[in-house]
Image (tube, rainbow, N blue to C red):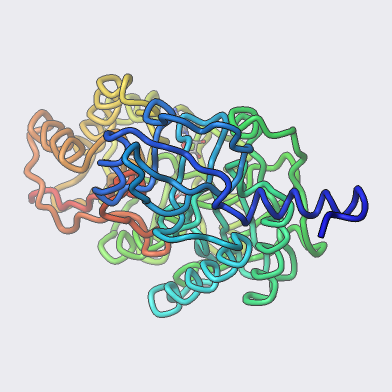
Length: 410
Ligand code: SAH
């Protein structure tokens, strides 16, 4: 039966973009096909043979040139990652599949995420929902929508309704990365609340409490991927402690439960202001210092300052493979200075969140820093990101965080 009105036609068109994937088909090269056979879920634009007439953000069937089917994917007309697989079979109703995946993501976390009301609920490809990130901060959820397909209105509606049903949050906020929307050729969008009215709350990790503010313009969110590492660091830390790149004070406040004196450094004043409020919330004393960490470590080590525990958690130095060398030099310098400042028996917690720096490369850098500092380091733990940020073995990009905990020789 033909659509009766313009409004009906619109509904039919939308449904065909999202559901009837048999009509939209992309053909991929042998190289692209090999990637999928190896268990990855991305096909780059350079590995597309044809994507004729495929609407931006639609669900597509993926085949190779011989007609072999690989299943269904979300298509982006602008990203270098043109195809992100979502199923090995047909997907007649993507919003429905999304609802199911949201439920599975929640089920996965139930036995694994403990002692916190803040964690990542959905981690994009690692939860088989490419282009979607949802974090929970107690009763406020924060969503990031990163691709054309996830930005479609029926997809957003399904997401909001499933999250509301499953987790009953007081509010759902959207974080918007203007640069990513631009790259995906999506219209600009203001960040803000999608559901409810609450923008700020208090959440807890490992018994330490934090302020959260989803308000516009504010730097929002915490580094939830470090949650298990905070607890691990607190287990070993002792004496006088220094938290370098402290942001809103998460390591420092965890260490403060064990260490009589904690100093913490960051270059961001707004982050330190929240850190100070977090200290008050937990009735802890931490000395917050606004400084460039490289300069401060240089001054402190020249002044022969010493600590019993040092945490290094810098921002990702290697944003691309191209600046790997510079990044490795940065990590080396920080670790060298920290190791020189540790008293005998001191604890070093050193992190890298650069995907482009492998665990082997990071261990190598810290090894070289120890050699130059004339310290022997015993590795107590080699850690990664918290289990609510799962790493899928066949998708290496899902793993990025390294955290080494070492004990300096007496
Ligand atoms: N350890 C924190 C996360 C750190 S994120 C936590 O677990 O919550 C990296 C931090 O480094 C940011 O807060 C940023 O403001 C800070 N930063 C970036 N460059 C810096 C520099 N040169 N000196 C000091 N801080 C810096």
